[in-house]
Length: 165
Image (cartoon, rainbow, N blue to C red):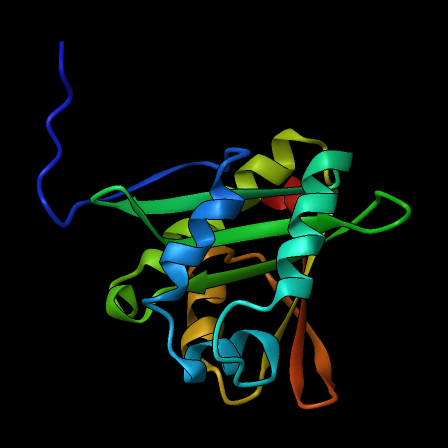
């Protein structure tokens, strides 16, 4: 039986090894402003150092993500990368401009938190630039047990113990 998907529908799925190459297509839908909110610098495209970090972490089993896909293109992702001690992970997300504001970031964060919990990650940490209120809202909506831990270097810092979700 064939699965019929409405045009414009966004589906979430686990990260696949070939997704790193597909991020180049996704970059077309990401503005410098969005990249600046995610990386702190208005890069013209997804930075090579970031793609290398994903590839290395995926190969070592210390990085994972959930992907949002629409009409065969990646339109967002949420990720976690384990720390050296593997007792915690950093959480981050990015949603392409056209798909922002409709709750996709919240859905992605919820999904990747569930994946991290299933992988026995005890705690996720997140840092959000103070000016990025949309990301802050998505994080709070996705993870109600989120704990604010302070502001440092122009970023809000948060922690969530996954046993509480």
